[in-house]
Amino acid sequence: MTASPAEWPYPVKNFTCHMCGNCCRGDGYVELTAKDITAMAAHFGMKEPEFLERYCTYHKPTHSWHLIDQDDDLQTCIFLTDDNRCRVHGAKPEQCEGFPTRWRSSNIAEYCAGWRAMEGLPPSDKRTI
Ligand code: SF4
Ligand code: SF4
Image 1 (cartoon, rainbow, N blue to C red):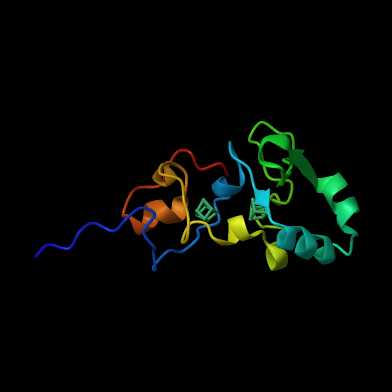
Image 2: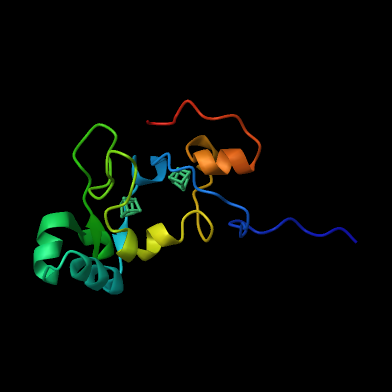
């Protein structure tokens, strides 16, 4: 009997992040849970309304809060540093925490340096640093 292919998005075990920062840039958004907002506001020692006002935008169609970006050409997340670190690492949103081992886009091999290495693919020219 042949095993059926793992269902997308199949879990991965041997992934290593190469810190290219590409998953924190570009199209898409980080949708925040209530728990994320509480944790990130506490991380900065801010009240939640102040945190939302400064770093988030309300997305009416989904009735949810999203992180804003740095208003640059690469659509860089507001919390990504110049050396590709996350300023809220200790209180990272659930969505970010789950990428790419629990969820990922189907074109991940186009932009994720760690994923390409795991698959034995050469580095991508889409690397942004
Ligand atoms: S919150 Fe951190 S991990 Fe999530 S997109 Fe922004 S910089 Fe990246
Ligand atoms: S795109 Fe992949 S390798 Fe690059 S920072 Fe994100 S998880 Fe790490």
